[in-house]
Length: 430
Ligand SMILES: Nc1ncnc2c1ncn2[C@@H]1O[C@H](COP(=O)(O)OP(=O)(O)O)[C@@H](O)[C@H]1O
Ligand SMILES: [Mg+2]
Image (cartoon, rainbow, N blue to C red; front, side, top):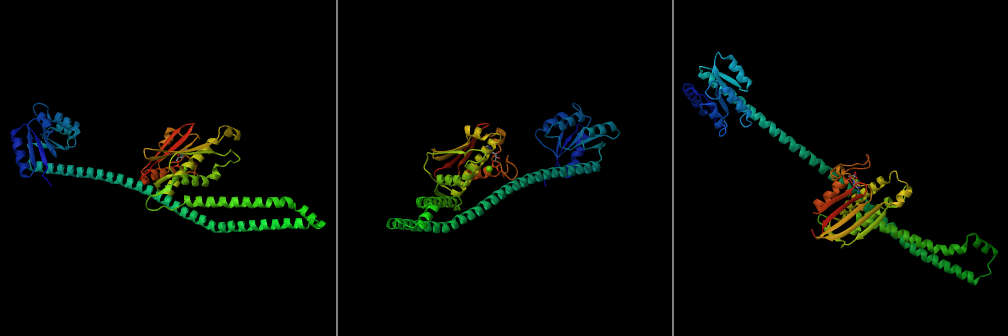
């Protein structure tokens, strides 16, 4: 440990000599000045660990010197020991009140000086150490808080992506399982439609060859409305084929939406991603008792191919579109069916290519949001929705996927009372 430095401020040569000899031989670094003014001047350049300050000096006295040292933030913590005459009680008390730590009585006792100087240096060192420890502890605490916060965030994302991948697997599994019976249905429909055509043809032939059928047969034909039945049956088959085709599309969309991403980006069709997302959300877009269907407009002016993690992008579309529907529903509260019909709920999806970025805009004409809410929507766990309805994770995750995973940007523009637009920028080649 480097030896402590001491500044002696005294105008009496005998005192100076005595103090210097004692402290120097005890191993301290000593500086000496002979007045309060020079002491203050010297303190601009050196930072002693302790000051021995004479009270009675020409020029500014020890008290004033002490007051000035204590009022300067750079020097206020340096311990000061006053040197004063034994009988001078007022001086001692006055010095201590000014912030001095101790006093030494004159005439100076060598042993006493050394003992007091050591005590106060030790105290000062201990104090510095405690201060340092407090600073370090505060720093550690802040670091811990930060680590905790980022761990919580990681955990949330982990749980979310875990859930998504579990859900993705489930959905993909269901979609796959639907495919087998669907294939069977399609095949059977084709066969039975042929059989029915044949049967109808055969029946027709019968009717031509045996036109004088018995009354039992003609009555039965009337009972079952044979003519209508023969006309309607092929149409029913067409509708059934239409229905299985729809199931097929849904199943494909589900598989597309929930496809498990690879480690690296692949070139994929993001428009299909939006379309499958819209298909999954279709039941929420349709008309219901409270409102007409949400009007959906898509205007794609870009190539659909982009290098990306497709199912992550689908999750972004899902989170933003679900929010738009939530917002529209909220904006319908208090409006009648007719009022909504006159000023219908809208979602407009547009895309364009700008500076090698694919720009996808998803806009709604719901109520928009206040500036204050807008500042927070990308924060983890921020939600304005009822407990159980909102998780406050959707946009935080969307932003992370767009910006960190894809090197893009997720922007929001919103005007209170008019609506909200989210813009997703994805670099075309990343
Ligand atoms: N299209 C929108 N219109 C108005 N407010 C929106 C819209 N999208 C998001 N918000 C606001 O952002 C908040 C955070 O959204 P999000 O992170 O998806 O969490 P959650 O949907 O679970 O609330 C919402 O609670 C809502 O207040
Ligand atoms: Mg949401």
